[in-house]
Every structure is written in C-alpha cells, then in structure tokens.
Image 1 (tube, rainbow, N blue to C red):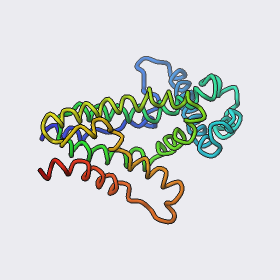
Image 2 (image 1 turned 180 degrees about the vertical axis):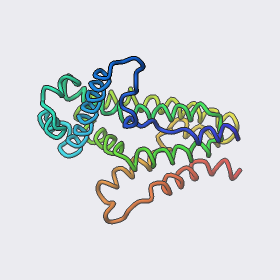
Image 3 (image 1 turned 120 degrees about the vertical axis):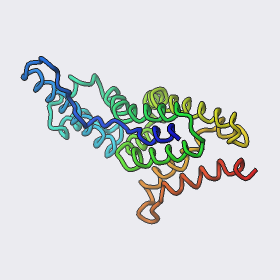
Image 4 (image 1 turned 45 degrees about the horizontal axis):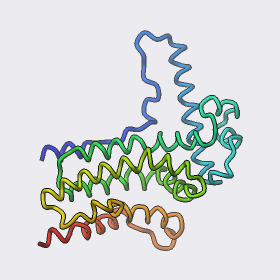
Length: 230
C-alpha cells in the first residue's frame, strides 16, 4: 500500500517552473543574464513547436522560428546549430521529464492493473491534454521522411519506455497476474488507444469526440481480463 501511495505522488517536472535557480554569491547582473538567456531559449522552443506544427518539419525555416520568437535569426543559432538539433531539443525538453516519471513508476512494485491506471492517467494528463501531443503527432507525420528524427525519438523516448514497461510486465507474469506473455512481447498494446486518439483528435474529434481515458481503461481491462477470470 505504501508503494501505491508513493506512485501517486510522482509528478512530471515542469520546465517552466523556475527557469533559473538563485545562485548564492552570484552577482545580480549574472543572474539577470542567465534568466534572460533561459527565457529566450524557451521562447525559441515554443516558437519552433508552433512552426513545426503549422508548417511541418521540412517547410519550417529558422527565419520563421526567429520571427515568431521575436529574436534575430542569429540568436537561434546561438542556441541550436541547425533545424534538426532544434527539433531534437524540443523532444528532449518536452518528453524526457515524462520518461523519467514512467521509469520511476516502473521501479515501484505494484499490481499490473495499478500500473496501467497510473500510465493511463499520466498519458492523458501529461501528453494528450498538453502540447506534448503535438510533438508525438509531428514524429508520426515526419519520422518516415526524416529518419534521423525517428531514430532520435526511438533512442531517447521509446526504447526507455519499452524497457521499463517490459520489466514491470515480466514481474506481473511471475506473480501470476498475466495469462501469458503476449503483452510483454507487444507492450505497444498498452498505449495503442492513446496513439489512435492523437490521430483522431486532429482529424475527426469535431464529429465524434473521444473519451481517451475511458478508451485506454477499456483496453487495459480487456488486456488483463483473461487472468482475472481464471
């Protein structure tokens, strides 16, 4: 029970909170310069996400990002060497804290149904209901044409998630909570409804809105129902 309470307390770090932490003994001008630099960097990343989401990766120009961020083109290059590194940093900044939370959840010994519920809540609250959804949509739409972006996303995000989920599911199988190893071999099944919802929201949500949380819960119930019924 204590483990479950701890897992509930896990929160995703917000990059927007306290961009620059106070440094004891630092001169005030240095703190101010650091804060301005961090704010410019964040403004560039926000502008990049807006441009990539509107134009796509190929059509977006550094000039467009600079204009939207209200900085000079040269300023963008002070922080990012090219458009690809800008996109990669967008992935790292927005998704890496979330991956850390998933890894922390996977380290807690909890029933598989509890983990599935936590994962569902995390996906809906921190991905589907935020601009992280736009980043994932971009990877899906642009990854085939720009394989380096897909490679980076797999290495920095997906591989870590799959490793964590498989480890937890293996423990669940050893405890007798799973009927077989199907979901271990295909852990993508856990979040497949969430990916479908990201597609759906961009195309058909105005016709038939999805309750993504309910759909993900229904999927998990079906995945784990066989063992519960035996």
